Image 1: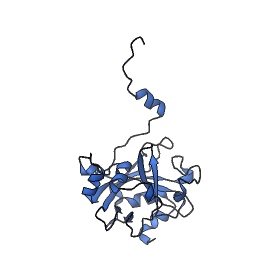
Image 2: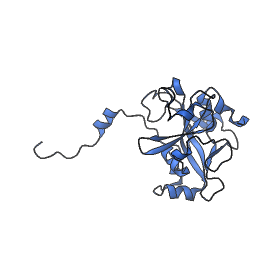
Image 3: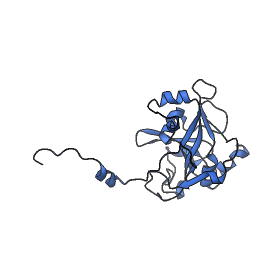
Image 4: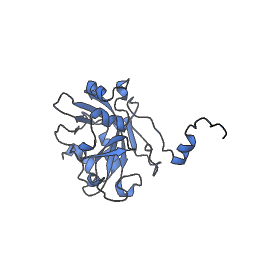
Length: 219
């Protein structure tokens, strides 16, 4: 791991998260299907001290890669529908990861569009964690991929120049039921690819808000 990735190996997951903004994640390097996304929004999760983290209750086969070493890809299936991508960070043996929430497709737009054919605007191709994974063509098979070296599966490159602190905003994480008020989501200010904020809605509230069908005769 080069010095440019020192933040990923540090103790503070929020520093690691900020350091990923502006980085470029490439899949299929050297092939006709290569896609590169510039990261514009991320979320930090701190492992056993963070109730919203997948590693909060300890090591499992699902979260094994989160325990290090840093720089690997943690991929999980969300709500039985979508794949989500995370960069493992923190000292080896300490679980932590940064969810990649959104980005701008800066190379391979045509390929990304074939993977997301219903999207109208290029800004929406990777706007949200599920869309980002789809645009890059990544799924469970990429679990554990080392990102900090050359590779056709996935590789991460630092930004050409550091992102100034004034260009980074922060706020609460999206859709988590635990530690929902923790402001560990970071994004590039005024970037059109950043996803909209949606707080978690408890299941009973979701049921109450769900539209009801027409009343049946006699009821």
